Structures are given as C-alpha cells and as structure tokens.
Figure (tube, rainbow, N blue to C red):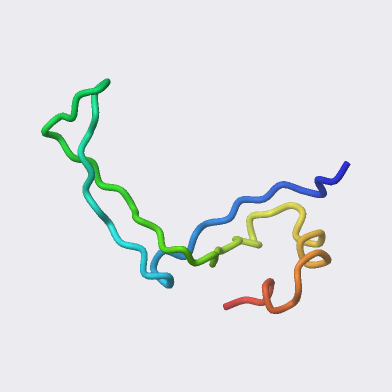
Length: 72
C-alpha cells in the first residue's frame, strides 16, 4: 500500500570522489593470491535517476522536489 512506484538510481561516484581499490579474493576460508577491483564509495548520498527511461516520470515529479528532478 505504501509503495507508489519502483525506480533505479545510480550513485554519483565521480562527483562524490569514490575510488577503485583492489581486494583479495577469498575461496572458502582461504585468501587467494588473486585480487578483484571494487569501488570504495564515500558516505555521500548523491544519486542519479535517469528520468527519460521511466514510465512513471509524472509520479516522480509529483513526489520529489523540483530541485531534484530538474535536468543537470
């Protein structure tokens, strides 16, 4: 009842200064020699919503303040 719509948002990694780090790969309880690149996100809560791909854009515009839905 409380869910009005579903949408996808992406974190603004470039604008927030998130960095790429390498972490070891674990297999079971053992750490391997392999590494895997991961994104280390900052604590910033800045996201993008691609309004042009949505079918419920009118609901988003009614729900969110104008400064959050204007083009950048």
